[in-house]
Length: 487
Image 1 (tube, one colour):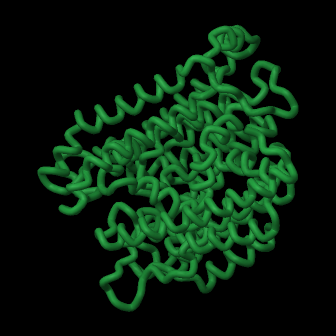
Image 2: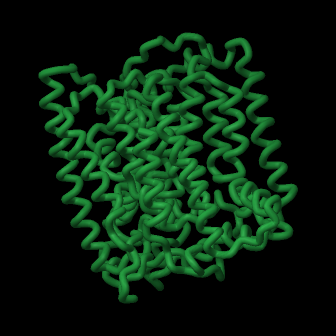
């Protein structure tokens, strides 16, 4: 796996397509910081929560006494992304061992984690960014959580807090509720049953209604009808838009946001232990739990305090606020644009999770309360159409989709077809910047697609979903003759 990753990513680094903006840097803040050999003085909150990768490169270039040009910036970030990509097979092998996956399940997971648009296209087309750090950090957190390595998990959480704004909270959940926190976790977990009374459905309905109310109360629907623009805060530039044609389908966009939230949150809460008050009482009274919880809270406050101390109070620079604003607004720009984007960024694994959403959630719940709460966090943000913002949540949770799929028997032919479909959806083969200017690379991303491009991508997504379903069904028929599938 490592050799295959090195071959593919190495070729993409050397000869893959690079964006043409500002000499290939894309004029990203990270590229500007590296060329200036320093962060803004003083850094705003956005900068300080993503400063670690660039700080490492700045230190390297200062040590070598080099002031990097655009080409060197692209090569530096691209090389860093290559090194990070090479950690994926190692971390995945460790996770697969803890989940006790078969060889076919391990290769399926490798295809899901590596053969996607995020790794094979985005990370080497737009090299000057820190997304790959967040992608790997989610997988690293899962690895250390499953292997019960609290010191490594703590270190990853603290480091990731200076790379990706949600990482500190994600790590805090896993540290607060370790895999064997109550000492009752079996060596071979089994899927967790939902509660007898549908508390999870009622809670999910309340969450969906609350989200729709926040969208309506925030006047985002009215903004779109008055002028097809969405903004983060007053007088800011537009962050997304909906065409006049899409305004006619605004009701469908609104409804799909509610349905997706309902389904995602109900699965995330469909765990009987989460609704067992006696179990929560035992957890709270367990020796060391309150001390551990206090320690995690102190860690979060310390990290956020350091960030606040060194950051300037620039308005609108809080990355978490931007993340939440996308969640409330972006899903309205076109019907189901968030689901289309998730599938485009992360490949057919999104379809596999859709086909078996509740069984996948039951496997997540089987490995502890910390992961159940992380799943809930991911479910709340499932309608965020800026899919790369959830890259650490994807790598943290997708292994349990593979665990579920491993209960079905995958033949070599089915694995090959799935890998081919993953490569097709990754767009690694498609130039994003053709010679004629009409096809801007930004049009490939859902929030900015013209209506014709959105329709084309939607049709392509349906076709790929059908292909993934046929592969999924075929694996089920094979599994019925071999390994029995767990419901």
